Image (cartoon, rainbow, N blue to C red):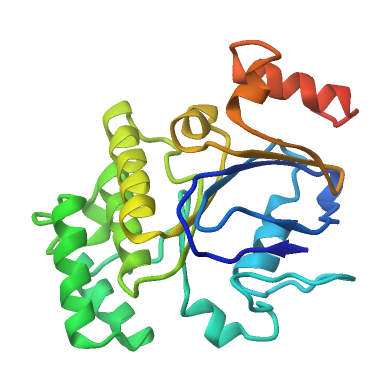
Length: 250
């Protein structure tokens, strides 16, 4: 069971490595309002895990999935109003229309009040430097520009929880730093819980103060970045060694 209840703003990370989509997660309560990340290998099954927690598309064979006190597959409408989702390799923006038109459509989908929409749009436009991008069709944006717009789109309705699936994949160094800085700011200023799935261990080092290693459906480790670094300064090598020590395939 994944249980998430938001009240404060520490940052934590979760490393997931599950073989053959074997999603059997034992009860685990994350610290409230963390930025939780799920680095993974090709056997992770993390998509199944996130689909259970994110949208309720999948239901657990046994046990319970709780996100912010709700069961996603039973309370889908109430649940999706409180979450935002960003995919590094997919877009929620309409490809051939200006970005602002996509934002307006999302406003209607989430029934965002005019005053809240205007406030959030102004804040996100300023923080993510979107002013010159809003009138451009999505297809004309660079990857870094599109990712900034995707993140803004996911936050227009003020979600309590933000799921980020490889948000920095393919980005240049400047764009990666901008995305990381914004995630930290969002977590600290608004108390937004961030759940991050990524291959990029630098994202984990930059964002996370707590790390949970999941393998073969069990919690294998729950600690800090320093706990992982006790095996060596290179976090990639240390995590790979942890995988090997639990006989998890590369």
